[in-house]
Length: 221
Image (cartoon, rainbow, N blue to C red):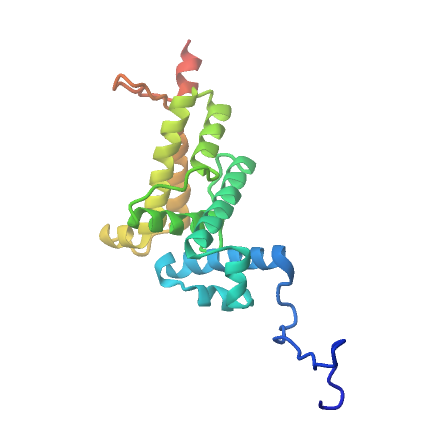
């Protein structure tokens, strides 16, 4: 036995395990959080299909086997990332009602958009039982504009569709409109204002939605 090598009670040398890099996640909670955050970032930047578990392990600075131990298989990881990102986005919507959300790849909205694209390509809807940013948005419409729940839910779905469409296709749409040099911040602010106006218009199931916001109709009564 080499000098300085520790031995167990039976005299057999105890070899050191894999060397851990300084600052690497330690323990189940840290590892799981690091893996989910790394995966969310990679999914948003590259697309879910282009990311492997090895990519995630390298970005999270953890051993590949720890993903399976603390998160699960690839589908389990995608679900865990979706739940985490959707919950964070729903919290942001409630905390900052009627404000334009951050849409970068590092933001909850940007990461959520990437996961929605994945589920759409897979032909499936959002995971059942997951946190729901659309219903969080509907809650803000109920509280801010006095919308009934069904109207708020419909307008939240429509506003989300507009926001996602612009987020995913902004470059293409501006090029198609021959407006590559337009002030994008102004365009986004105006789109937010249009969405807020839409959010105030009641929805009815008889096919005749009101033509004016709830606040305007109330003021005339």
